[in-house]
Image 1: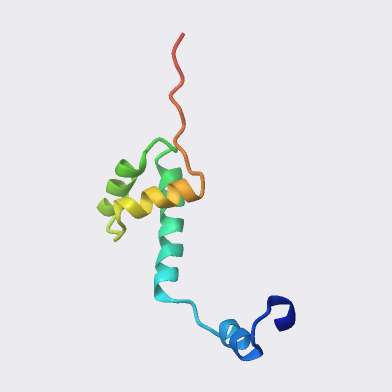
Image 2: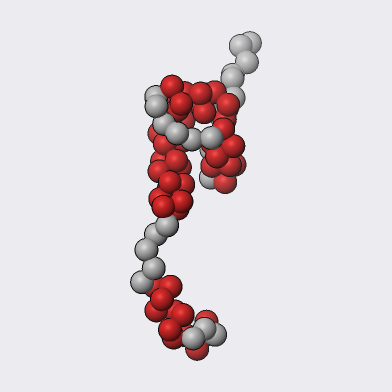
Length: 84
């Protein structure tokens, strides 16, 4: 494996045994929060209203992180259907 990846064995095993950073854990939790809140709001909120919704529930997340998560994972709002 190390030969294929062109890395030293010590570096490879160090990378394998590395713990997950707190920042990555926070990002994963925020992703789950955004996905759940998006479903709770019936997929109608943009990132600003979704951020407000999460902050009102007591979560610590920035508006820009909500926007980035929505863009990265393709979480979009439902469109309003026009009445004929």
